[in-house]
Amino acid sequence: MTNLPLPLPLSEQIHARLTERLQPTALKVIDESAAHAGHVGANDSGQGTHMRVCVASPLFTSLSRVQRHRLVYDELQDFIDQGLHALAIELI
Image (cartoon, rainbow, N blue to C red; front, side, top):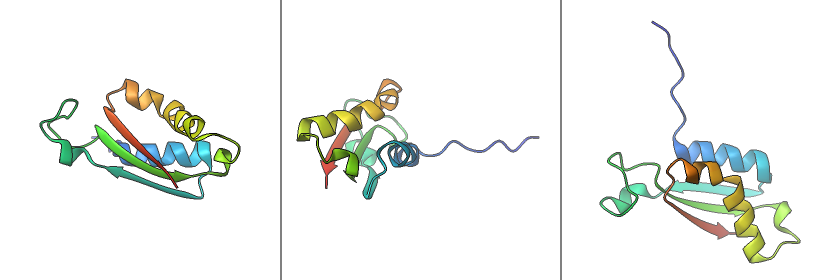
């Protein structure tokens, strides 16, 4: 029997991705999926479908608010493609 590592929760995967790519000075990823149970895009597990990201990054310095949001969305597009239904972004 092999002990394969369990995949990280989606919130931790998103945190790792944004840490690597945006070099944030502040970052919080909150899984709000349980609060959306029964809504469109929710799953039976109550996890991994609705996320809130609060982020500050030096890479945002010369970007407009829309460009900052686009940058976060672009970095997380593969998660969206794999079932992340809702992503709330708070720029701090």
